[in-house]
Image (cartoon, rainbow, N blue to C red; front, side, top):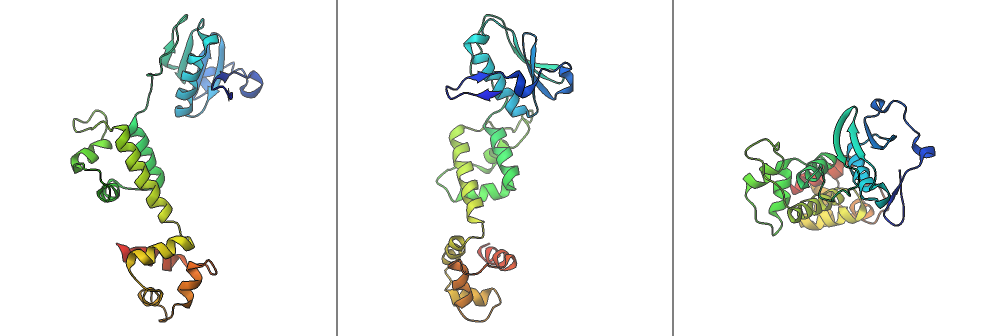
Length: 214
């Protein structure tokens, strides 16, 4: 499947190939008798909705399958409404936390430094199973704030000259004081070289510097 500049979706048999055995695909979209393989669940749902929105597909039955299980279908002669979605803000939050290796406790700490005023029980509810009575549906404005602080934290955790300088200033230490705190000779020269990108800061020193903040 190929996205066009106009936002539409076009099918290319030469790119994806016609599947004689659609059940071999983890996910596939079926438009009449033509079947297209998709390996990723999120991509499958996104491409399915895009195919259903195409006016040229209005006369056709469009179906989304996982293996041989039908997940969703658009009837012939109809257009699919955009409110068909298999994921919500909670799913995006959980995936982001997993990718950035951030625990719920760390997320709470990051959110505590923002102007967002939420109870711990509400934040806990974001990552609970949807069948749990304590599950809390996350709002998109809350998601934007959470992702912003998590990404900012991840960027700040990168060992760059600018971040070394920023972290030292956040600790309120001079270059000499930082050197001493890291178990080095009381001189600013090595720290200065790190902050100016003239030398690579050892990972052990960077990790120790981050622990000083905690």
